[in-house]
Image (cartoon, rainbow, N blue to C red; front, side, top):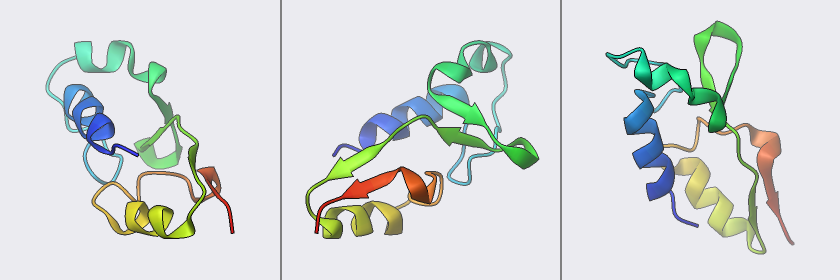
Length: 79
């Protein structure tokens, strides 16, 4: 799993680690719905399902810098 993709997309669209928009251009918001859903409180949540066979991988994503941006129900892993 490459979280670097979400780092680049977040930077391009002005989304910080909490899912808040802090951009400086209306262009950043024009197609934001391609990658994000707008949640309550003006937060943006990645449109992603994270899948892995090992729960440990998901734990490292959750504890990483972007871990709190994803919805908990979008993590799918084997046991």
